[in-house]
Amino acid sequence: MSRDRWTDVKIRLVLVAFFLLFHASASFPQVATQQDHTQSVPRARVIVFVHGLHGSRESWRASNGAYWPDLIRTDPRFAYSDVEVAEYPTPASNGKMSSVQLAEILWTRLKQDHVWEHREVVFIAHSLGGILVEEMLLKHPAEAVRVKFIVSYGTPHEGSTIARIASIYDRDPLLSDLNDASDNAFLTQLESNWRGHDSVNGIHRFCAYETEDTKPENGVGRYLRAHARVVSYFSATYGCDVTTPPQAIHADHVNMIRPLDRKSSAYDFFYRVYRDNPILEEQVVTRDNVIAGLEAGCDKSNANPDLPVPIVLYSSMHEKVITAAASFINAVDLRDVNPNPPVVTRIDPDGVAHVQYGFSGPSKKLFVCLGTARASLKVQFYIDRQVPIREPQN
Image 1 (spheres, helix red, strand yellow):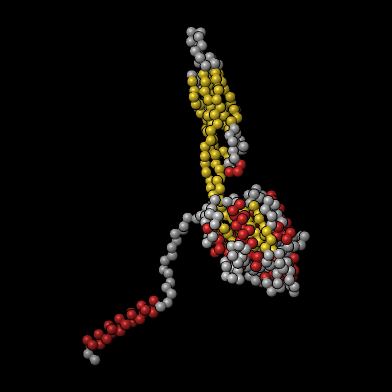
Image 2 (tube, rainbow, N blue to C red):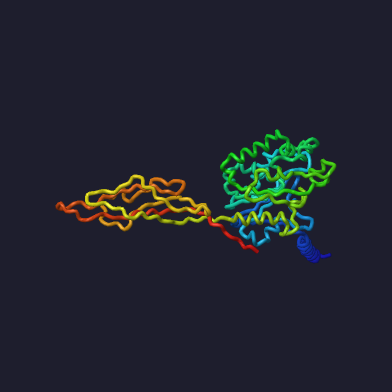
């Protein structure tokens, strides 16, 4: 074969190789070489799902394939909320971490997922998940102020008999944390701390409880030889808001958080709590109070170092005064205004502004009084309030 012909063959082989390489690479899934780091603006509220003992992200999936977080994501009644499905390590047996350790892991993961960047945070927590959420918020009061409410499903606030029995066979520290023994210092201290800390005791806690026993092969029920109630009614509802009755979920401990559709009692209960505790939008408005009829005669003065001036505040909107300013209006013949202008010296928690003012009336001229000084005192209040945002109802 001539040298030129051999060169031509080599060129053809190279072209064929490139052709095969291109088509071979096209037949396999492509690996992304770039990642979009653009963070979308978070919605006003985020709903965080926190699973229970030995659970995972799949704990919320029903037998028909319905996935609770997805049911909410596609429900227009939650249009202003993001959804976060949290996960933490809790192996099926012989776990090594305590509730305190897992609560810190949970907080870190929520921080990494930008949960705390939302204005409001609410939790749907199952079983141990409710305990971890409370422990986490106690340790992180700066984030707790964003939390509006927690809806707990089968959370053993007073412990669980099955957890106590299971702790005999399994040395997982979580089982000790959840046992129903009267000397369970962890749960007792948790509830005491919750009630004693202003950063969290204003967070509403709503509760649902299971009405059916769990089969031996399900969850921690495997440690028993008969059906049993994993979390009792009293344990599941202890410490929860009395204004909203606990919700019965006609399922066992494992399936109570697996609604088949949006009409299921577990789903409907959360929706009703959500609807009754709407997202609040911060607004600043101004409101005036005018004190009329201030007078000072000839060579006289009118002064007050501490005049209380109230303003109406509406508790339904959580209104509070953030600042106030005072001034004279409709003033006639004022002299020697001191201070100039009037000064708001302090504001009471109930919205009463304390004003310092003073002025003098006209002076006599040739022993003749030339009238009376008159003015009104206006105090303008800057008020922070929270206005409910109503989402679509269907």
